[in-house]
Length: 418
Image (spheres, rainbow, N blue to C red):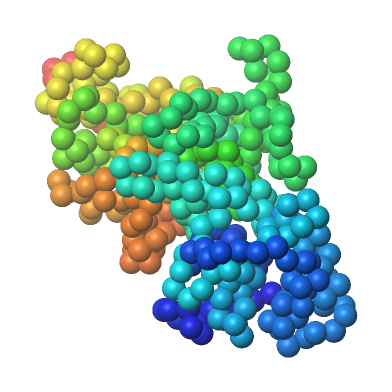
């Protein structure tokens, strides 16, 4: 059911669909005094807002209202928005006039036939920038088509921030209580725990928003699909700088590593980590084990480390790393040890996003803090989805291994080895 909000509500807005989460999550309005109303009054208003006032429409509207605790109604004729809240059998009406702002603290919506309940929407998750849980959910609603290809058909490791980035966070792997009936989990045997772990999945927009509503600021998928636990379909390099390292140093290492991969004829995809580091992902055919991919990546990392000793360190202990150095970490290429997905928001000040970048953007002026929840959509419109071809680019490594072996032999000869 769509209504045109362009009349008398400030700037021209697109038609609003009452089934759209964005309608319930954020409208350009704020509250006025309320009053108690009767559900039959709501039905009459609904029929007045449409051209169809027959009994069937009224009955359908009344039935919808009986199953909801909140209902958002846009009335063109009166040029206002009405929010109806149910308290037991009674309905409470709040009216919102032109140019005012509506910010529901909690709301129930239906998305693709799935019921979702969001609470604490006005809670500030990022205090330094005032970004709320509502804005985080709205971001993932808008970005679902871009992030879901990297979450579907994969187990997820949840890190929940129910009180935002300044509150207590915790990891959660086993997810089996308090779930809507439509939410899917995947059971995986855990040798470490000696039992089956039910991991969350995000197969669609509703699942993604449900997890975000639990306080998941970032989303972290396994590198393998659910049906093939032993064979990932990508591996990655995690560039992890020592404390105080300028991001320009991270960029220089990323550029050197990308050039190394190009020399091996490998297609790689680049993104900021959303924190102080950088990620380089290589899509592969799911025919290699984690150990094989980790070993291959380790050889490449050692080569880049040896070629750039003033920029790269092999020291894994953070406290022992020399200042101004970057570790090329490949150890997380292992079962159940994921990195944040592309387009995932990270739990740091200003809500940075793990943002895909082009190789030509690997310059000292690249500033990861400018790639955040408020700039990502505009960047997408300008540059497009830079990881759109990721799954079309899965590759085999045999030729790259041959090239790498030849390079290593050439290096030994230059160094006077056998």
